[in-house]
Length: 129
Image (cartoon, rainbow, N blue to C red):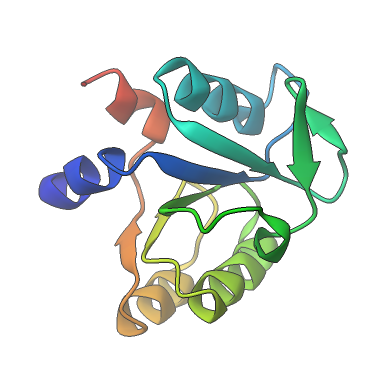
């Protein structure tokens, strides 16, 4: 998985599904850290219009560009919806944060040919760069 993580972190356009303005939540910490590391990042969360001063989108289909990677920071019930959208949009990379997936979701993602990272936290992996 290390090569896959490295490859994914080389992608520069990311969406964070579950981005939030709440500084105590991982959706906020991940969004800000990706921006800090120079990534082009899009916030996706239908509960917000703005995250960290940036426009927030209801879903991946609304994004103005096709992203390289989707970071999932929502519960497994919402994560499967996100995965379905990733597959429909032919996005090649998905990163499930710890606690956001089930074995079935990971299997569905991998069988569909989506590059899939899970178990690892993007916050931790960015600090290794």
